[in-house]
Length: 161
Image (cartoon, rainbow, N blue to C red; front, top):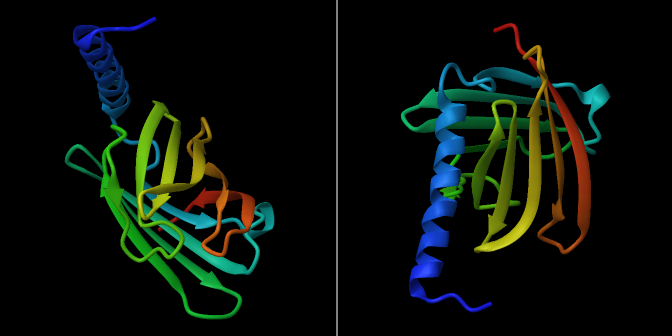
């Protein structure tokens, strides 16, 4: 069925309102993911990583994430990004796998991150915070820069610090 300019415009406005309302409803109160998190290596399948730490803080209209991994060999990995849960493109500084991402909040405890490199989707990560707020899991699938496919699951525990 063909829609005229007004039909497409109204459909676009409705979609934008839905995304905005999900982000606003989820943004009320304290962010469930805010805080410091340590990688639980024993419960994760992230090959070659000895340890990891994620720090998430709330900022105006969203969040800031700082991620650090210590590989079993090679240089430490550090990257940062900040933005909202509105599906808008967010630049990522320091990550060799993806240079931008979008975040879409599904509910208070679930977010989907779509990772891009050079504008092309290279991965999708679903982040789920446990109801008790003590852990979060991240399930990722995508394509590495060398073209190989990957799937991984990581678990993070809320840090004491």
